[in-house]
Length: 292
Image 1 (cartoon, rainbow, N blue to C red):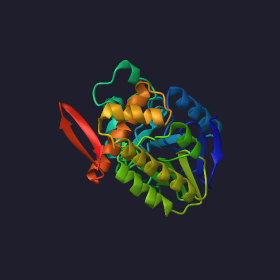
Image 2 (cartoon, rainbow, N blue to C red):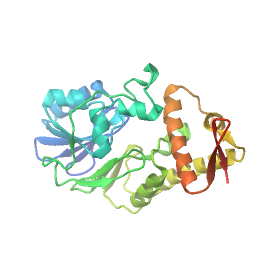
Image 3 (tube, helix red, strand yellow):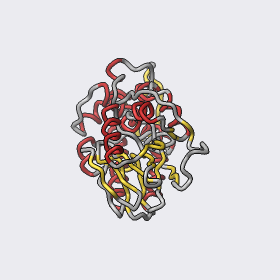
């Protein structure tokens, strides 16, 4: 874990739970693509940079999930580097309490205020900032989170953030977190047509052909949609639906999974309702969902 791998003339990644990309601007200056999940990750990154004689010029956050921005504060304190993020992701990075609050739908209890959902705050600039490295191509990858981006380096390596999960991850967790299902499917369609010398997803194997992984992820989205549609042939409220989903996928509920999967299922319900596949009515002060 935390081994440095080279995937292009100037492109590298650190193999860790959420892969950290490195773009080498010149012999001494580098940019990180994400920073790991906590202060310890930041320390390990510093060690790798020092061993290679590299100076950290900036961090580009693909999105604001805690496992991608958790090393920001430590690295910024140690190096004074700038941190860049896009749109809503910049706001979540500056005010990280927004992530568990959004997932839970209110003020999060202590069970949700931990490093896996609540990173330390860091100072962040928009990717439109004049110091953002212009030789890096920004790739919109919305869907998994609000304004998530990917990065293509000049040596044609594409860092895909969280828009792709591995087959093993999908089989283990069944339902990957998605904020906007329609945008996520649009992103998969775009990624499927991309060409690169190498693709580096944060939570999947590094590959030079992304098509198979895209198809596996798309199939899982449609599987979850079909599961929800089938369950809702019997009208029910959200909590009953969520229980059945956990039961049928053999998942175990705790506060973190309740927030992550619960938020995702609500996103599926919105998408399916907007596409007139299900309906929602209020009965006896309950919101009841059912298939059409």
